[in-house]
Image 1 (cartoon, rainbow, N blue to C red):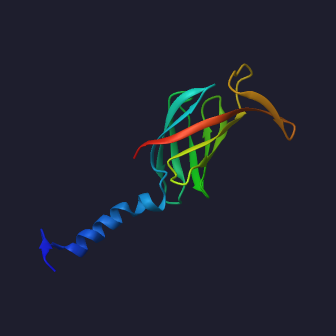
Image 2 (image 1 turned 45 degrees about the vertical axis):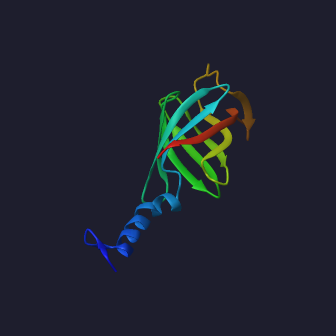
Image 3 (image 1 turned 90 degrees about the horizontal axis):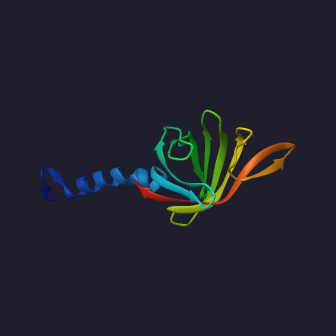
Amino acid sequence: MKSLFGLSLFGVLGILALATRGEAANPLGGTWRQSSADNGESDWKFRENEDGTFDAEESGLGNTRGTATLRDDILTIHFEAADLRGYFVFHLNEDRDRGRGKIIFIHYPPDFPVGREIERDGRKLREVNDVLIKRVGR
């Protein structure tokens, strides 16, 4: 087989396959934009860990950090900031490039205005529904 700069065509194809394998195996890594009519928008940056989870860092709104997982097309982000703690749950589309879901705030300040107050298992939480997320970069 003819070589291109010392690599055979099969060698080049093998390198390309290895370079794209991570994206195909788990498409979450990169930048995603989250938005809701009630809460505004922010960007999330996901960086994959060795265990298959992702470090999640939000820019804008709460500027929170946390851990994200993707399983069965459900993206979950558990987050924490100085006075906030909670999680997002998004159901992604078939292409895994956008989704719709909600935010549940577990810990928040007494005067926190975001979402509506709900009670679950005797515990007061705040919930924001109809939250959208979409990929905006790798």
